[in-house]
Image (cartoon, rainbow, N blue to C red):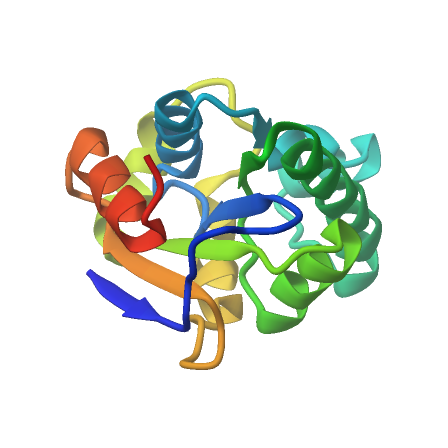
Length: 180
């Protein structure tokens, strides 16, 4: 576990948490478990993609920034709205680049806390190859890893090893955020 940035108690407008990382790290699993533990909404970032984005990825083509901006704006707005309405909300979103994380924050009107799930290439490829019904092909893994800009010290972020059980990951995030 590696925590960077500051997280304080008493989020005035609401707490927005984004579970981030490349495809196959377990973002949805952790985001769902965390939202359940915090009794708050969970937003699946994939559902905010346009049909054109999903088709492009399904065909094995990486998205461009121009493809991503409207998606990030939709998800960020929904995350901010949910966090303000319910006090806190969790989203699962790749948020691979700093610019994407900044866009989510701007669209949400909040300063999200990011939880990066880290995992090695071979395990990621194995996970992606064995899951069914997902549009993201293993062929895009290398482009996702190349795009990934891990959060830096001035970002509000926690990095966790995604091979740990979900309950341990939830506990680590809760300790970091100091939320019950």
